[in-house]
Image (tube, rainbow, N blue to C red):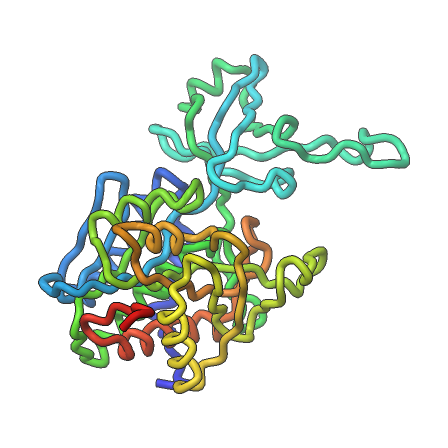
Amino acid sequence: MANKKIITDKSLDFFEKYLNNAAPTGYEWEGQKLWMNYLKPYVDTFITDTYGTAVGVINPDAKYKVVIEGHSDEISWYVNYITDNGLIYVIRNGGSDHQIATSKWVNIHTKKGIVKGVFGWPAIHTRKGEKEELAPKLDNICIDIGAKDKTEVEKMGVHVGCVITYPDTFHVLNGDKFVCRAIDNRAGGFMIAEVARLLHENKVKLPFGLYITNSVQEEIGLRGAEMITQTIKPNVAIITDVCHDTTTPMIEKKTQGHTEIGLGPVISYAPAVQNKLRERIIETAEAKKIPFQRMAASRSTGTDTDAFAYSNGGVASALISLPLRYMHTTVEMVHREDVENVIQLIYETLLNIKEGETFSYFD
């Protein structure tokens, strides 16, 4: 499968539809339904939980269990306060960036449907002085939905607690760069689904149970992974998430390291990453001539890897990341070849895991 184009026209159509669908933290279910519908032909059954994590299972009766995982939620905002003259102030739902908000369109999700709005901002003519002191902050950005007062806002169905997303949709830039909001980390859900598709199409019979896991609520503290790992109780977990392309302006490589789009999957070194499992992944990459990069994390990975690793008395866990530019913006960017190489690396690693392996240092 080396050097073969992995992403098909059909799978790319799914990826676009999946990215364009809104699935903010705590409200992931519509995206999960799309994902499960795509995955259904390639798995034996599904597990879902109270908060919306979805798991496609291959060989559900096997005692030895391997997880491949991504997370399904995207950053967003909540309506927090409505002024008497109908302007809406917000709080974060996940790591939303106030500095990119101004002049952006938004979708406010209500029981009456989507209400459109904009993050307004004072005109440059009104911001006087040689030094620009007025900058976007969480307490001075607000949404205008064209209402004359608070009463009209409420009649439109908007109230405190409504969730707010950006409507920006999927594009392909220069032939091989995928650009959209929420690539962090619906790319992960897409890639693990593609692994399941390849296993099915290549008629691979795994000697263990495979749990293709699309977790919720990662953006507010790995919560979905914390819950589902207790349900699955896996022996091994391979997590995929995104990491920063550090070659873009205003990023310091001395602190962030050097990783960039187009150079392959990024394999992490961190206390939560089980060393023997990580080395198996690296050996697989080298044997299959899959390009890869390395990254070090000081204490935690900041991904669902941490939740799986420290659960159930300790689960052998590893992290394979997709390098991404402009994280937590509406123009997140990844390279198609990196997406395909992450898929191939997870696929080939699964073929290189034997039933019953403990990855113990003492075997």
